[in-house]
Length: 116
Image 1 (cartoon, rainbow, N blue to C red):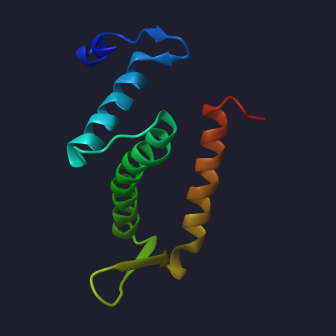
Image 2 (image 1 turned 30 degrees about the horizontal axis):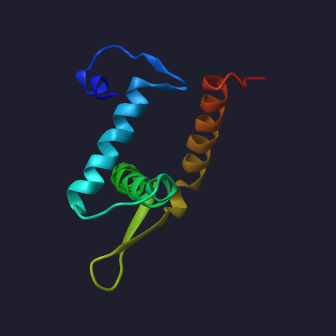
C-alpha cells in the first residue's frame, strides 16, 4: 500500500480508500518515530497507538476552535492556577452561541442527507 503516499487519486482497497490507508500509515509511523522500541498487536495498535495520534490531532483542532470562539467573544478564557486555562460561555453571548449551534446542527443534517 505504499503507493498511497504518492498523492495519486483515491483508489478503493476493500472498504478503505488509499487516502485512509495513507493516513493510518502516517499515524503508525509517527507513533513509532516517538516510540522506536514499541511493538504491539493489531488490537493494541488500534486501541493505543492510533488513539494517541487521534488525540494529538484533535487537541490541536480543539485548541484552534477555542481560540476562534474566544476571539469572537463567544467564550471566555480564564487563567487557572499554573499555566492551564478553562473556557466557558460568555453570558452576554448565550443567544448567539445557541444560534450558531442550531445552525450547525441543521447544516450537518443537510450534509448527511437528513434534511426534513
